[in-house]
Amino acid sequence: MKLTDHDATTTFGDGLLEGLREAAAWKQGEIVLETVAVNPMPPERVRAIRRKVSKSARDFEQRFGIPAATLSNWEQGRRTPDPAARVLLRVIEQDPEAVLRVTVGAR
Image 1 (cartoon, one colour):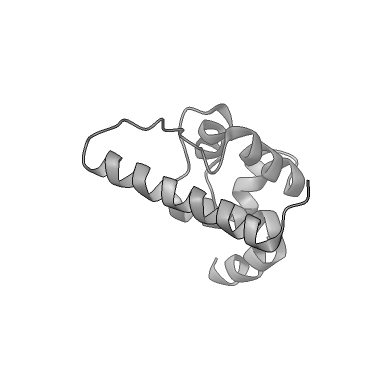
Image 2: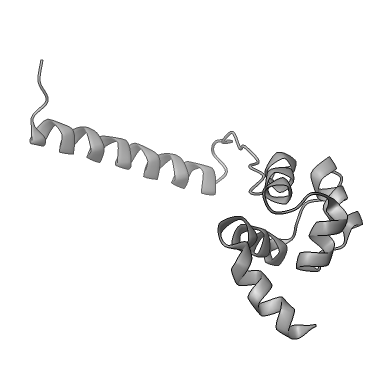
């Protein structure tokens, strides 16, 4: 059986209405919804970023100014980078030279 555009729209609309009803019931305390905590910067990703751009945590510290101990805590999962640190790590991941251009002049 092939779905028509109308069928797909109706299915989407029905799902959307069901979700809105569920959200309203949760807001009024009528139901409990399952939650999932997502770590936006898991230790494995921090480690991969560091390995991509430096040989060691000390080298990373010298290049980007993030203390090796802090980096180690993130890589071991003992701590989680705060939002500003996550932004910096994402920039380092995407364009480490951009960070170096800015930080070299500031030292």
